[in-house]
Amino acid sequence: MTAPAPPGRPHTFRSVLPVLALCWLAVFFDGMDVNIYGAVMPHMLDDPGLGLTASSAGTIGSWTTFGMLIGALTAGNLTDWLGRRPMLAGSVLLFSLGSALCAAAGTPALFGAGRFVAGLGLGGLMPLCLAMVMEFAPPRRAALTTGLLMTSYHAGGMVATGLGLTLAPAAGWRWVFWAGVLPAVVTVPLLLKLMPESPGVLLARGERAKADAVADRYGLARPTAVEAPAAGAKGRWDAVLALFRPESRWATPLLWLASFCGLLLVYGVTTWLPQMMRASGYGLTSSVSFLMVINAGGIVGMLIAGRTADRFGAVRVSAIWFVLTAVGALLLKSHLPLGWTYVVVAVTGVWLFSAQVMVYAASNTLYRDSERAAGLGWVTGVGRTGAVFGPWLGGALASSGNQSWGFTSFALAGLLGAVAIVLVPVAARLGGRGRTAPPAAQLTQPVKGNPA
Image 1 (spheres, helix red, strand yellow):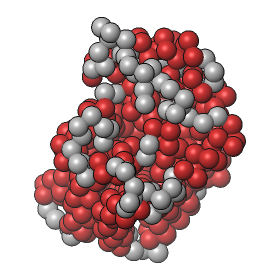
Image 2 (cartoon, rainbow, N blue to C red):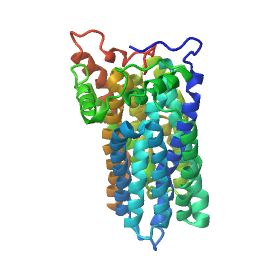
Image 3 (cartoon, rainbow, N blue to C red):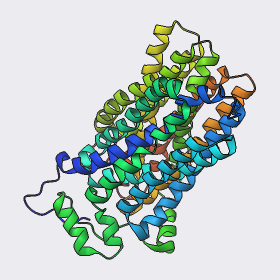
Image 4 (cartoon, rainbow, N blue to C red):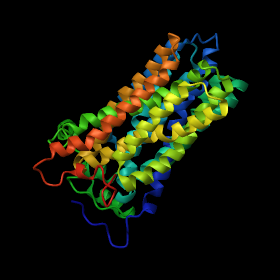
């Protein structure tokens, strides 16, 4: 139950725009940082002074995502003490510092350390931004708002690719990483000055007056104790145990598996697409530009997926998108004419990235108010193991001369993700038999007052 919003303060899409805009900017730089590595990797492999090999490049990609895994799981604990706004600013500072370390690194080991530090910040940022926009968004627009947020990731990826195509050949790959320091200068002051704190987090910290004031200002329902994230180690452990109540005990690991597959695809493709396309016979410029094209497709996909999920349900959309991603990966294995290859890459981008985001939207519906933050955090955190595995797998295949098998591996991951997400509502219904209206009943339904 939630307290009613104050009269005259309707909870509309417009009310979430300030929070969405700030999170959009932060995630824009997140996407830029994640994609920078793939955009400049061909130049780094050609730099004899650095000594980077295909195998070590894959390992470094996995160190980045391993840092993201730690950052995602740690951010929730620190949020109890510091709040979401300071954690968002700290995450941006951390991945900007990592980018500076990469720019100054003289060996693969030091470069890998910089990517690990960047990963710590990147891992904490995404779940925090997702939680913020889902909390402030109107329930009927939860999936759409999530999709709009994630367009920023791909806009950042396109900018990273542009820097890889222009700045790296002209001034060297190091200057591309120096550009990754800009978020600390641009975004952090805006977050600290303009971003509101989460009403739920304020209430969990005992600041009832501040929580109500923020809720009133943005037209939100005032939070109640059942919606507030549990504080302290015991509260967090209880929140994790609640993810395995009868209605969700089987659906939870299936969501984790779908997230694993989705993030394996996202980070495997963004890290290795230029190099795999180069190994398939395309030129260096074309191979790097494919990364820009797939991110452009990702922006379109987020807008389509958000509206479609609001109408047909996040599970259906995610499953179909996973299957279409698998088809696109198999098509890319064939050496098509350059024009057709651009088309296939763009269309694959439409499905690839939003398939994973709709997994987040599905988890937002499965769990109760008091479980939602923990559920989303664990879906994101466990999924990061796929983000670790994807770049490593690409590096292992590249070092053995089997880059073309990367497309087949990504197609299999897409099919497995589709199976996992399709089984989520089935498992939820089986677990909820004999119980009253489990939240999972909304998983395959259009959004009608409940988040999707």
